[in-house]
Image (cartoon, rainbow, N blue to C red; front, side):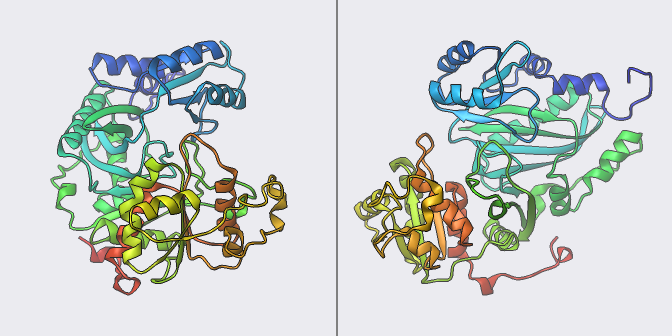
Amino acid sequence: HYLCFKVLGTKPENIDNAEDRHKFSQMLDKLNIAQPEWKELTSLDEAKSFSKKVEYPVLIRPSYVLSGAAMNVAFNDDELAAFLEQATEVSKEYPVVISKFILNAKEIEIDAVAKNGEIVIYAITEHVENAGVHSGDASMVFPAQTLYLETTKKVKRIAKSIAKSLAITGPFNIQFIAKENEVKVIECNLRASRSFPFVSKVFRQNFIELATKAIIGEEIPKIDKSALELDYVGVKVPQFSFSRLKGADPVLSVEMASTGEVACLGDDVKEAFLKAMISAGFEVPKPGSNILVTIGGDKNRAKLLDAIKKLNTLGYKIFSTEHTSLFLKEHGIESTRLYKISDKHTSIFSNIPLLKKAQEDTENIFNYLTEKKLSMVINIPHETTKSEDHYIIRRLAIDYNVPLVTNIQVAELLIEALAAYKLDDLEVKSWDEYG
């Protein structure tokens, strides 16, 4: 551009307006579009002051972030200091962007193609997981199934406004965070996102072909098709390589960890999700088999209570750790307590390499996992408190190839799918048989 070459598509100046956080934020303010409160800071004291002002938790984003590298969510001053030290030395040369992190919010994306600032086609997808999981690691649903109508309308209005303001010609993706019908913009990327192939397949419209036509100035036929007309649902799930990454903690976060993805179609979201999980290598537990449930914090336990009741109704044998077991019993769900790694021999298991030695008790998690007595582990970590026991459980599940779920929303949808479909019920259809 600076050498006077003609650049097709969106003007480079407008790409810069989208990529430069300050310019993009100013544009959103002018358009009266909400965004999470943020600030670029150059010292730890400034970071602490801002974080207290917006109230923890906060999202820490170092300069030059790629796929969420070194991004973290801090819940207090100590975590903030530790994460900033881990990322880089904060200074005027290496500032850090800190933004308010919204708990229990929904993440939404719109993939679209525009020509001269007018949107010609779009697809609104929702993440299964709440905000806080990197978009590359999130399970995506299209068409979105659980969004309020008002939220969907706001997403469309905001996307149209941004496309017009940036005079977009070509592909773009906008990520939103929504809670109680309040919609805020996280970021806008003037490129094809990783979900472009997914929405193209599900929608049966080639978004890249349309984007190319827009970029080179060809006429684009009017597209009357709406996602609401689709009588099937697509779900895209991530694939991970934790079994090859020795010692890695298999918990989803704002830092991307997946190494692949699989998408499937179904008559409803449950069928599509179950198919996608199986296709990604998840071994569905057989009815009547043993499932370990260990959940950090009563708030999380309450959120999953109905799902656990459903598992019980489906005939699965529930095993749990001490506090989860007591909570379930209080709410009328019987489970078999298994001892955690540290329950009786804390000193033996204070370090991961010492896992070679099992507890003397036979009714303990170590033995049940290493002897393949469990068909699935649901391990939901506490948001703010880290537990070595929980980490060891997750790591053992990965190392001994026991299916593992570490996210509340994924656990809920998986259990709903298990309740709705038996494996023999799942029909294998070609893409052409849908639509």
